[in-house]
Length: 283
Ligand code: FES
Image 1 (cartoon, rainbow, N blue to C red):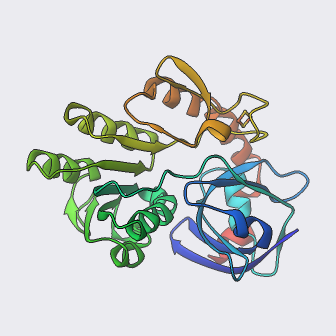
Image 2 (image 1 turned 45 degrees about the vertical axis):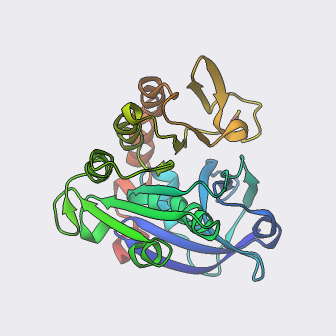
């Protein structure tokens, strides 16, 4: 059992949990993820590790309440215990001295991009970060990203913070201005990562994306997390979650991510979230 020792609401529907998980924190590396199950009836939820403290044995998880399971998770409080937490899973990010790197986080994707950005900064790269959200009140980790970036650009869909538009607009401008970029790391919604990859493709800048498909076992056995990369089928849980954005079959990935939308809608309707949930009403 894994106790929640701190809980914070970062934005509406975006929660941060600090969880006591010393064995996982000890081995965690930027880019890796965990799979958790809230209780015996809980769905398995893969979450990229947002941060970790090896000395204190703490794992930081940040998630958006999008479906029934993440909404139920968001109702847990400090002192509650998560039944299973498996990890760290997946391959760690490749951290090297590349030169100048651009780290892009969209929405809740800023959470997993944070430890990667910090590690790239620590590896003596010049770090330009671009973070974006729908609006100012949905933007998370702005100050933390500023601390570990040489330059920080912000974009919001409605212009309430930073420049009005998308993170890709900022990236396109940097590339058009002939800023030399050695690596781009982008994490966020699939259409955002696809758009980043399409913007960088003509410039030939290596672009790494982190895929977060449906997962079941997280050990390469079930095939639920398959992603087409180049002419190969890869499993995000063991071969990823990071892949070359220029090689990912985005149309297939987006199609697969929508496979269970109807079931998810039904699950919400049949849960207390479709009606009078006391937990949600308190917020
Ligand atoms: S989650 Fe089962 S193979 Fe990846």
